[in-house]
Image 1 (cartoon, rainbow, N blue to C red):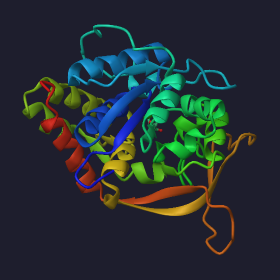
Image 2: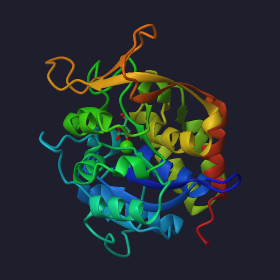
Image 3: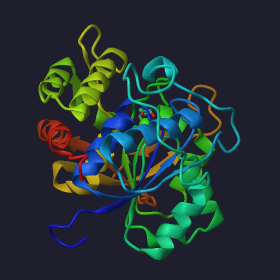
Image 4: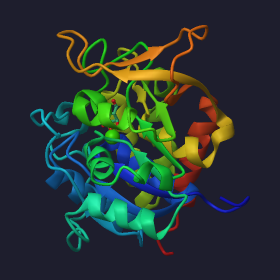
Length: 313
Ligand code: RIB
Ligand code: CA
């Protein structure tokens, strides 16, 4: 990426309240060359429809390709209790104008990264599409600039005390990705729980008096209620935009090269991203684990995206 130009990304997502905020953030700070949807927070029919609704709201030119309707081996696992029955909280966006450009997210990821090297893959849902793409063509990991994912956590989970949702929903997919040799950047809960947004940020968005501001306000209010990490406070972790901003604004983050494995067997720990913090042990480091973030600046950039994204093109 030359200085001043925006990084090219493919956003693989399961909208999802925070995924929707990530799409707004990506519109402003990156060049989205494609969006792929995956079963996750809600079934893929809804995640795809929600991505299309955001495409319409933001007048996104990039194509949307729907992907995996279920994990590689385990049963589908959703989080409608966190994101609402259809996945976008209580927003009232109009139905999409059309269908996705295809139902072959994997084919799109492989074809686009062959056409153009140096694209960042940014998965912010379960890693099913990414794993299936790597399985189909392992050389994918050498063509992309990075796989920068929201998922996992160093010593913290949310579905269980050990496992974070995106990994827990498809641990076999995550295991394949973490063993792929990709330039892997992991923004886990230990990082994203430092970025808290809720009603005060929603009020800023509503005051913009724009369709994007209204939708962002609704999403942030809903996020504050359902992603609440501080009981009673109407603020919640804003997970997914962190992965986008780690690519567009890397200087706002601090990461360390670590060995990370995905637990598949543990009766209490299945889906855990086990991070080896033993810096004195010579292990194969397969991932940059993110630990620190300039939360204030990240929140500022998310709100700037809401205020500056111009759907009129
Ligand atoms: O654990 C948080 C992650 O799971 C976020 O990506 C959220 O959208 C859900 O998919
Ligand atoms: Ca997500």
